[in-house]
Image (cartoon, rainbow, N blue to C red; front, side, top):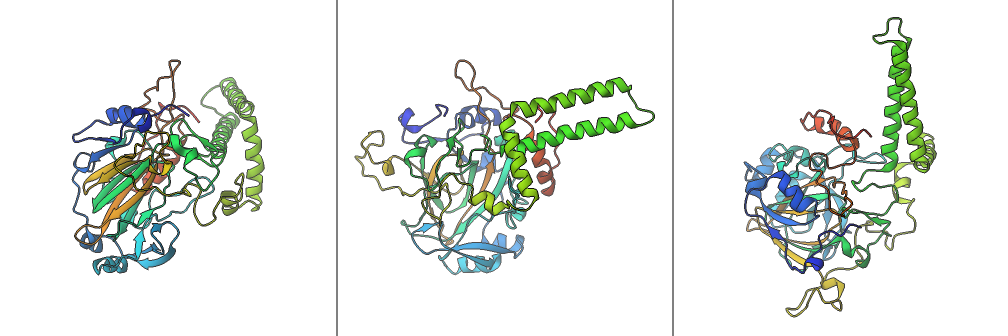
Length: 424
């Protein structure tokens, strides 16, 4: 794992607060590349922000079904799931109800990735918030999500957990307290799943075929093979025409080059291709469905079956004033940085950073946040072990940008293929 920013290495008990405008490239160099959390102000990031409150959402957001978590303990994450109309939930909040929490609304996925950026609520919310954030430069969007509930208790909190994507967390109403740990602590925080790898950019994986940007290697190679097959087929079609636009020898040479490229890919990544062919054949025969692939192919069973891989089996503990988080004898549960967010604050939290969250309602008896998840960048170091600035092309190839083109169209964003990126 790359020697990245960690508050224990830096001997600091707080993260940066940025109180001014910052360019996307500077933000990339100073924070994203360094995998360094910080707090931004919404007036510099969410420009022309509307006052989104319960009345606004009742008026502007359709009364669709949402999935809520019903509180059963002092931790959200294992509560009973309940389906409810969105406007009914808003009415319950207005009456002071504290039983339900609107958290992750999952979207449809295939075996490798989501089929959409949005769930039923965020698809409408992005009409009133930026669909893309200028400050995130050339990173690719993974998903949007909304967090809405009512709480006054200081005991209620989420499980300590990490995410798989870089997070821009926009607090619209209420207050939040995050207790965060660097990915450097991953093996000490007792995740429910068996960690396979912590990548250089902090991405924590539990499955061996995941790249550092979160892409599934088998899907990447499937796309590579499909692209090469398409090239060969197109050139064969041109060659078979009576009046080709270019001479036959040029076409034949191009076909040979494409076939050589195909063989090279097979040779370079032989083991992955063999595994891919095996799994792909199983998929074709409907033997290996998504649920089996996702849940039954772990290297060993999770410690608990009621929480995900990336949830921890421990919680943080309250510190005393004389507790030193840099002392090796201090309990790991106390070695966090505490980050307090107020309305209008935005937290940038890179993937792999563990966080335990407490939410507190505003005077209107609710708290509301909206977040943007981005695929984390590929981190490349040079011979001097310095991280290279890849602001223009933060990923190793075109895979994510090409795959996302269709998803952008669904939300009214039309992007061109980036010819500057490496072919996949």
